[in-house]
Image 1 (cartoon, rainbow, N blue to C red):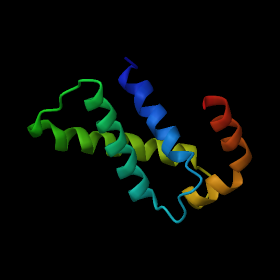
Image 2: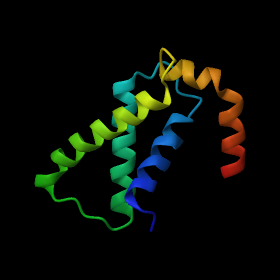
Image 3: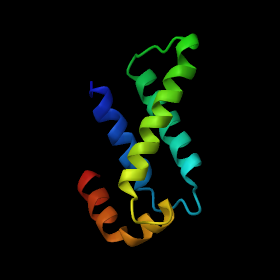
Length: 97
């Protein structure tokens, strides 16, 4: 099983490198990463108690938002980041496929 921080970064990167999503704002991106991450945790047998889910989502939102800001620093949007780094992203995706 992948450690939770490694899994979060892996999910974050995979969502960031989706070149087909256009006009995705930061809030939508962050929510998609959180949903994907929680889904992967559950598929690995991790159980998140209902009472703790909101707290976990809030914590993840802060973490993913910070990761996003650091990663796209200097770009006006996620779309611009993807467009400017398309070749790098495509090489990464070929390598991990």
